[in-house]
Image (cartoon, rainbow, N blue to C red; front, side, top):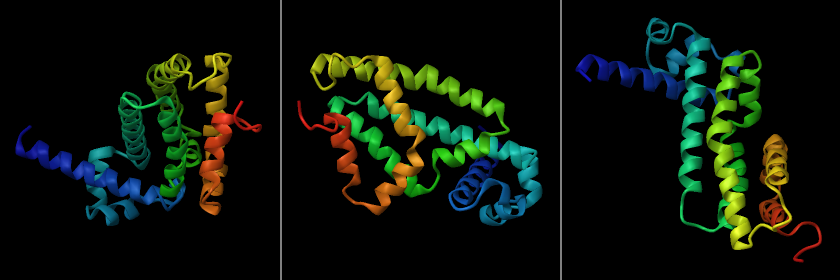
Amino acid sequence: MNGFEKRASLIKEKIKKATLELLKTWEPKRIRITDIARKANVSQVTIYNYFGSKEALLHEVFKDYIDQAVDEFTEYMNKDISVKEKIEHIILQKKEANREKFTLTMIRELMIEDNEMMDYIQTQYDEKIIPLMLQLIEDGHRSGAISSIITAQSFLVYMNMIIQHSKELGEAFEKNSHFTEEMLHLFFYGLCGRP
């Protein structure tokens, strides 16, 4: 990479970082190129030169965000730790995502009209996340951390329910400091406690 390419790359990263910061506090429709330019300390023309439009910039920011989240999840799931710790991480990750205020709800809102991004996320989920979850279930069955009567399908449905309700769960995490422990207990032992 020559000097010009390196500088261009740094400017693009600065613009994307500023956009991501704005998305944590503003609705996507309210964000203007002017706001992004001011936050990134670049001109509006620079943003248009590198990205073409606000929509293209948002698209690239989301793609990077999804890629980073998938990479971090993959790295964590490949660690040599217990199944219980991995599941705790999945649940606690929702708590952290809510604290950042850049939640799945906002991602969904931004993707309503972006079928290409929806397809990208679905592909990432199908090709990278599902295999990791299936491995987790298999490891859980082997170690006894997950009951042998729990199928992969029921586990994935249960995890998807948690993900779909991440906004409500996140709000509950913020209001009740014991909620995380309650959710982990419910996940591992159900309503009746230990068998």
